[in-house]
Image 1 (cartoon, rainbow, N blue to C red):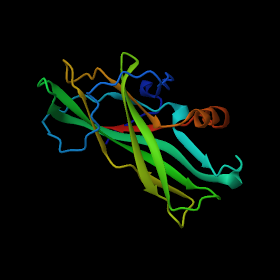
Image 2 (cartoon, rainbow, N blue to C red):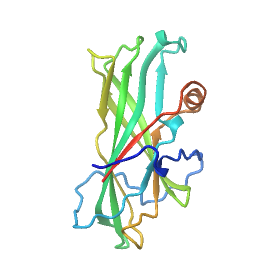
Image 3 (cartoon, rainbow, N blue to C red):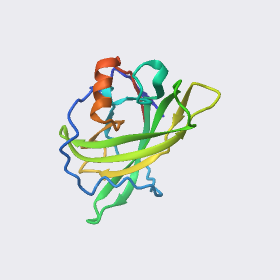
Length: 200
């Protein structure tokens, strides 16, 4: 899949809040067979806001390195778009297929061999969030290594194609689902992340 440069406008670090969401039915999050045609519809632009790319967990006894359980970092977003099914009104849908490339780090206080990672995909139109889907993945930590890279399973999301299949009317923001304390920690302790986006 071709790569987009991290300097692309796609990586604009949109920082809008995620509290007020108008949930509508077009974000399905389904995982079924997709229909492939000769000309695939255009993909929405992807963005990973910097403060939402990292999740560091601790054992509750302190915030120094000795008490760290795991560190998770989004390194890249991979995806493509296919012709999807039709909606209930027989309108065409675009099926977006997404996978995250994550770096997992086992901390000194970690005891288990797995880590559960919540992340979200938000759909934006004209800069406003119109829907949001939250996924949860339980991933295996490599016992022999402190740092490993994994790809999340493909997720399939259907969005309206719009009047022109070569121009998507939507964009997507993708990030780790953080609580307020975790987000504040990232903003005050971590430097801005750099990303790669692989879209076909």
